[in-house]
Image (tube, rainbow, N blue to C red; front, side, top):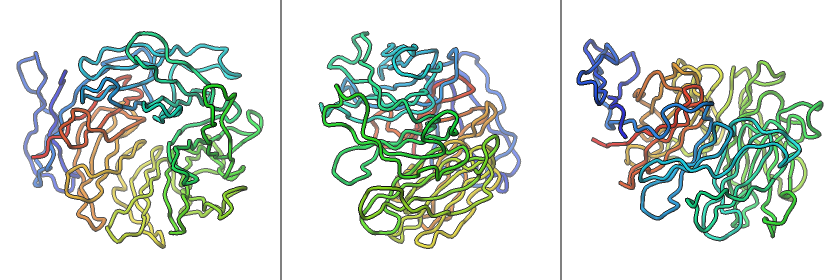
Length: 409
């Protein structure tokens, strides 16, 4: 059900005076959301829809796929000691897994910190890969909404501190692999301050764990966060990007990329993009300015600011130095004009959700979507099947799961 309609506003430097109103169904009156009127109107109106209004725990990650073929996205999220599948037609939650001890060497927390979708077993549907002290996967059954638990299997329970799980074809063999970090120290894991990629086994249903390749071997200090994948040097091999926050971890506050070696084995060469990046988190390779070179977009999700590194030399450009704790990052064509736009949301309960319209050359106009909303996971997904990209948001401290409907004006 739609809970509210928000009107996008640009960065405060362009504001004039006026009122923007927020409509709340059932209350019969509007209340003031912002006390400024933009001089530049957003080409997109965003409407918020609730999937989970208030869970008992934080909701850190959410993914979507159409499991019943009705052209409405179904959503999987982890919270309240379980993993739940929400049907797209009515958002009814079906528990597909219970987070219980004894399935691996590590005791799970009430909610996964991150997740992604991979067709692990090659049967044509999307299985869930999650990080909850242990990397695991849940096999999508023939009847995903039957109410029976999806089969749980361990991917790896030796690396620890996996704040990101990223699906991508690392070795370019046409099959999806998994990238995950291990930022815990040597007292907790034998793979401290490292990042690895994993190959899906030939028989994933019976394998004890996936094939592990540690490419950043004790080479990723600090609180490493979200990774990205792309051929940054044009050699035809997939390279991997990462950002790491500092406090309470030592050696963080950097952005870097690792160069995929020609042999494909052993530690990869690390290239530091920037240091002293307080609260570095997200990083994603993408062509921002249309020059056919991959650039890199990043956020300081435990600090302030969103920025990009212009390829091939990776010169740093600030996009928005003031946005607070942008712990999520979307890189996608949100306005349908053929270039890459951005979206992010602050991590705290008083966070701001915003999108950035690209002029095609790497210059951005900020438009705010919502306020008083946190996020740990923001995805660009066509939730309603109308051909444009909406934003699916796992609300973290707000304990909600929502999506913003994209309505191009």
